[in-house]
Length: 258
Image (cartoon, rainbow, N blue to C red; front, top):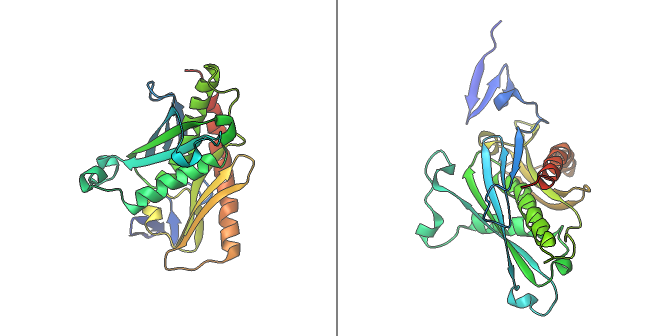
C-alpha cells in the first residue's frame, strides 16, 4: 500500500508522520564540521557548517577596553553578526544600506558576546578586547547557534596565538561553550531545526551550554503554542548530545595546527 505524502509549509509528512530532510531522526543533528584557520589574516578564525548553514567566524585582538572597564584590569569580548545578501534564498539587502542594524541582529550579536564572556576569564585577558565577527554565508536555520559554536573556536585560536606570542600568560578560558536549536513541530520534539522546520515550529528553543553541561542561556518561545516546564526540560535533554558533539568538534579544531 502506497503511503500518502504531503507538504505543509515546507515540512513533509508521509503516512501521517513527519519526514525530516536527509531522513534524520528527531534526535539527530545535521552533519557538522568546523574548519579552523579559515581566514589567515585574523588572530583566530573558523568556518562552521551545520547542514546547509555556514558561518565564518573571526577573532581580532587589540589593546584597550571600553571606557567602563578602563583601570579595572579586566578585558572584554564582544561580537558583531551579519548575513551576506545571498545567504538566503531570496536576496536580503545589506543592513548598511538601510542605515541601521535590525533588532534581530543586535539581539544575536549580544547573545554571542554573552555566551563567550560566560566562559572567559576576563581578568586573565587583561585590558585587551577581542572582537568576534560572525558572517553568515548560507542560512538554513540555526545561524545564531552555529555562530556561537564557531565563535568559540575563533576566540580559542586567537587566545592560543596570543599565548604563544607571550601576550597572555595562559589561555583565559574557564570552560567551552556551544549551542543548538531544539523545537516542537506537530507535537514532536526535534533537535537542530533547519529553516523549513524552524519557520513552522510551535515551540522554538535555543540552548547555549558549556562543555561541563551548565546552561549559559535559554531562548524559549511558544509560537502560538504554550509549553510546560516538563516540555522545556525534555527539549534541553534532547539538546545535550548534539552540544556534546559540537564540543568534540571544537576541541578537535582547537588542537589543529595552522
